[in-house]
Length: 458
Image (cartoon, rainbow, N blue to C red; front, side, top):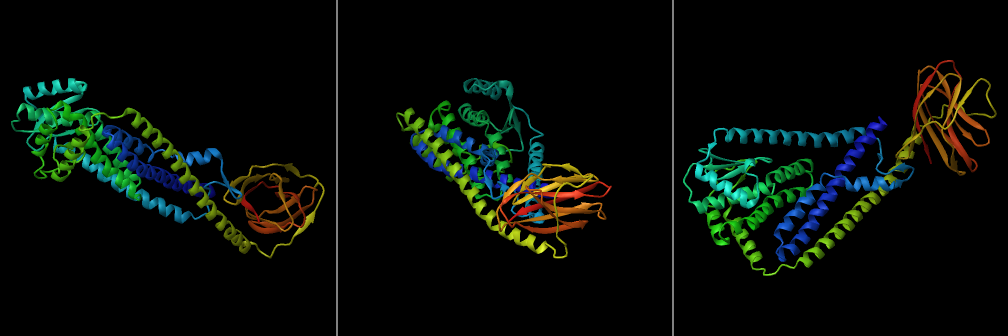
């Protein structure tokens, strides 16, 4: 149970730390992006946004803390503060329920899209020839693109992540208009926008509790269009003609299809895009040195900010941990029974096999023991240093439950204090002088005993 609780606790911590790092980089991107946009580097702003997405998947902060081996109290970093199994299961259960529900909806939308375009047929020869010409201009392998027509759509769109399928409505387009349409849609494909939108949707599903994940999803939709405009208009006769064609599809929403990039444009958003691209096109000379400096500052600022936020999180956890540690000690005091008789002995016991330095794992403030104690043997933990006034609380569960064993504390001088118990034991051993001590379980019977428990140093 302790191991499972620790695993669940670490899953929650990984999720929260990763969401914190990703969200922080979204905030940093907003500031850096504004500077790069003024310098005219719209395409770089979009590329940086793609990098931000990675931090919502990679547990950089958690792995960094684990790598440096930062410890809290007597336990390791991010070990459970308390064995609140039910609370951890509830948190992960709610998260998993929302994720599974969202993934189910995602799968259904993909199924709907595939059905929607199932009746599409090969486009006219003239359109396919123009498509091949544009593919050559954009350096896209023509065999990766398929041009279709469909009666089910009134606006052009492109689907497919690895192989593009451009769907045109069944109507006649002038060649220059069709060039704008195909260039726009193929640029989306070349930028891998559909793949990026699906990945950003996965970020949103996994981090639905983080408002900055929602902001990231929104920015991906907007900036994919900015970057597409930036790369498309030089192939389409300039900004004016390019946006005149796009404006023709901005009058109304004619039925949008999920998981496709459609030429339907919101008129208000399109006006903003015209302003943005016009401003960028007027920048006569874009200083490459400036963007290098901005990128260096962005990298340094991101690293420092994420590192600082991570360490602050660790410190906050440490304060919470230390507060919970005292509460944990009180719980153990309540569990200690006054029914036990304390015995003292020293020297060797004839016929008893000694098994020293048995494995002990540390979780929170607890030293956990899972020992098989053979018949006629004494299993001991490694020594640790204690000072007068401290105490060691030992709790253990034994199987078979009817076998009585010695649960005790041994000093370096060979003095052993112990209580006799069967099935279950919990006892607090006070420390009366400074020295080295170790916990032990002694089985005087002729039956092997399995012991699972822990001890805490107060």
